[in-house]
Every structure is written in structure tokens, then in C-alpha cells.
Amino acid sequence: MSGARVEEADTVVVGLGGLGSATAWELARRGCDVVGLEQFELGHPRGASHDTSRILRRSYHTPAYVRLAGEAYDDWARLERASGETLVTVTGGVDLFPADAAIPLADYVDSLRVEQVPFELLNAAAIAQRWPAMRVPEGTTGLHQAGTAMVPAGRATATMARLAREAGARLHDQSPVTSIDVEDDGSVTVVAGGAADRTVHARRLVLTADAWTNELLAHLGRSLPLTVTREQVTYFDRGDSAAFAPGRLPVWIWMDDPSFYGFPTYDEGGNGALVKAAQDCGGAETSARGRSFEPDPRALDLLAGFMRGLLPDLGAPVRTVTCLYTLTPDRDFVVGPLPGHPSVLLGLGAGHAFKFAPTFGRMLADLALDGVTTSDITAFAADRPALVEAGHPVSWLV
Image (tube, rainbow, N blue to C red; front, top):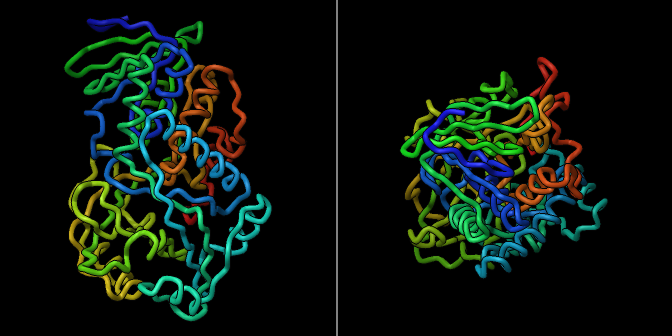
């Protein structure tokens, strides 16, 4: 083994964003000896776990996702109890399906009914009556769920990292991985450079590295068909209006192509009560190391134009923040062992996982310690057709 410092551990987690911090906490709280490695500073803005609000909702396109989202609510509640922090802000939510929407309304309605999750269907007039700030075209159907909520990305990630350390996890930032080897006995040796050169030898490895996943899998001669896009979210001035506050405006998603989403005011970042909105999967293809942090003015113009129609009393854009999506062809998660290497576990969220962050931690800890999890992850295997068949169709609308 190389490196100036060697650490023995049961499990090493590489990548300490939302999913990795959740996994380190779950492992440590169960008594596992865990080391976490992060190539940048904890809470860095280069990936997908920084900034403020994320959506927590049960409306999804398959019963399995609806069921998993129900588990996520339980996992967030458990995280709140463990941390003593309030992390879930219930606002209600509405999925807006225009006439002939590219995303089928029936998939959502059927999935919610199968899982016996309450919802309402609203026409355009009812949407405007319930949320006076919102205007939608005639023929639009709103799927409303009272339990939809917001969770804070940056603060929740920091909370899970804090809990992991308090439970005994050894988390090392500024520690970029330079090599990964799987030994003949299945144990894993991970070498990290940076300010504190170290080697970690562990029984198993959990990779929660998002846009850097293939860079790390290359050490094992593997790769997944992932597309990294540079996305952006924009914050809008609400002026003096209270019409955009939680309780007056829901979390919303425009279920068409292009797809947009947004939030009521949420002052999680200390920048004032602004309204956040974005296009889903609208960004250009990039790479983890080649991406730009500069806002795309054309994307901003497209979003601002949509917002003028949906929320006509909303103010001007104030600031734009960039992030990365790491997308599978079918936009399903990756949760489970790397084929051929059962001691290497993968956790990848495909650009819609933060609502499931504590759930990823629970599932990956289950797999690491027990080899199985009670959650249904059958659609998330790393050797499913979408990840192994050449030319598999790409579909990111969910």
C-alpha cells in the first residue's frame, strides 16, 4: 500500500455530498467503522448538493417511486429527530400538465392510486382560485398533493456530515482519490492525495461521487453510460407581495418539454425571501472538471419568459446558481453493487435524488452491512438494460 498514512476501516465512502454524507451517517450510527473521502471542501458548490431548496414529493411516474418517496418522508423525519433540526417545510405541491403534455398525467394518477396516496385534480380556473398568483393556460390539469414539501440541500448535507462525525465517522475533505484497487479477498485499497496524503484499506467501498463516478470507476476498468449536464437555478424578486409565500404559493412543476419547476419564497440561504425556479434537464452537456460556473443567458431568458406567463406579478431575476446533473439514459437511480465487484457499491441519483438523500444512506448502509435492503431497488441495478445495452433510448422527462 502506498501513501504516508494508512487507515483501516470497515467501509470507505468516496464523495461526501448529500448521498455520501447520508451513507456515512447511517453506517456510523450502526457501529460501522467508516472513513469518508471528499476531494473538495465539505459543502462545496461544484456538484449537486449545495445551495437551498429541493422538492420532497410523492407524485411520481411509477408505483415503486411513489412507494420509495413515502419511505423518504419517514427517513427525513428520522433525520430531524436525530439532529434536532427542522428540515422539512410542507407547502403543498401541484404538478401542472398542459393539454397534450409530453409527460403523461395518467402515469402519475395511476401510480398514486396504486399506492393509495391522496391527491386532487384541478382545472385551470381552480388553480387560479386556489393560488391567485398563478396563471396557467386553459386545458391545464393540476395534480395537487397537500404533503409536498421543501428540504434544504446545503444545510441538510452539513447536518448529515455532522451526525456522521458525532457517531464516529472519520470524514476527510481535500482528499482527491488517485487510485482504487480491489484485492483478491474483495477488500478495497483507496489512495487519496491532496494536503493529507493517505491510504484507506477497507472491507468495502461506497461510491457516491455523482459527476465524478466514471472518473473513479476508470480505476477498476469500468464505466457507466452517464451524461453530465450543467444546470442552473434562478432566484426572482418577489417585491412586497405576500402572494409567493409558503401557504400562498405551492411547490410546482410544469410537466411538459421543456419542463420547469419552482418554489415559494424560502430564505434558507440568508439572501432574503426570493422565489426560486429552474428548467429541468435544460443545460448543455459538460464534464465535472470542464464545466462553467457562468450563467447561460439564453437559458435564463427562456426561464424568465415562462415565469412571466405563470407568475405574472413576479419581479426580475436577482441571481443564478449553477449545478450538475449526472443522468442515466432512463433517469433511474443506480443503487447496488458494481457488477463483478460485490464489495463496491454505487449510489447515483440521476438528477432527482436529493429528496431521497437520507433514504440513499439507509439503503446503501443496508447493502454494505447486510447485503440486502427492505426498499425496492430492482429498477436501479447497475447491469440493467439501460446501462449495458448499446444505443438504449434516452428519456429524462419524469
